Image (cartoon, rainbow, N blue to C red; front, side, top):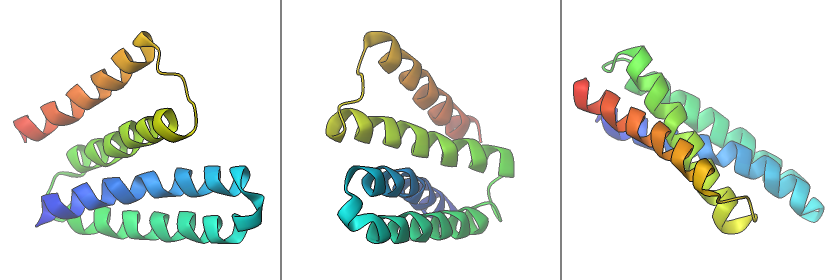
Length: 106
């Protein structure tokens, strides 16, 4: 259960930068997007809190931010026209390798 909380915490970690980007991209939905961002922050933080009760905080934090970072990069590439250069993808894959590595040695 703690690992499931941590995975969902990481997924909600993607929601707050997405909400900010949507607020900037679609000013008509500014308040809806900010509410999405704030709700995502709150849920992400709470789920991280639950997960770190059983998972070492250093491991939990790196996995949480890794899921958020990699997920946000993927969203940016797929939906907002962010660069998908080879070097950028290489460095994102290094983050992913680090996250998986920490899970494997836990």
